Image (cartoon, rainbow, N blue to C red; front, side, top):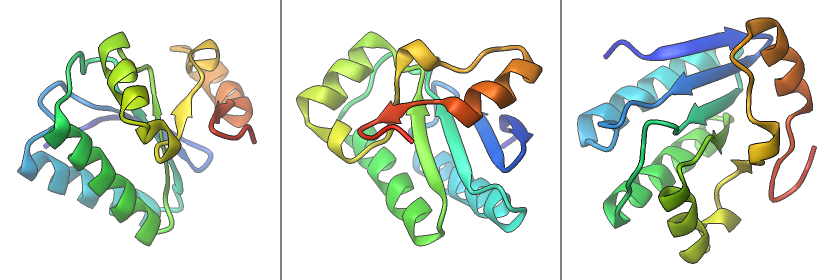
Length: 128
């Protein structure tokens, strides 16, 4: 799969397609995360703007990505959540597992501003 991503200064933003929650795509995403880690990109922001609905299986896939990333020393953060997805994550208390970026600090589309924003982004549960 050709992933839409932007890399800069050890950070990477991956735009997840709405069809990401298929087993093969999750495996491809893990391969991408591993490749990024091998190239000194250890913080990955998953842009979930195209994902308007999730189910328990989808949440399981996200947990799987987090477990893989943790074992590979990659920090993964979710951002740009759609309201339904955000609500479900908070209702299931998975917000205590996932790092979810504060909507007030979403990444900008201008690449020069992205670098600054990423270096200052505040994520839940603890600000850095």
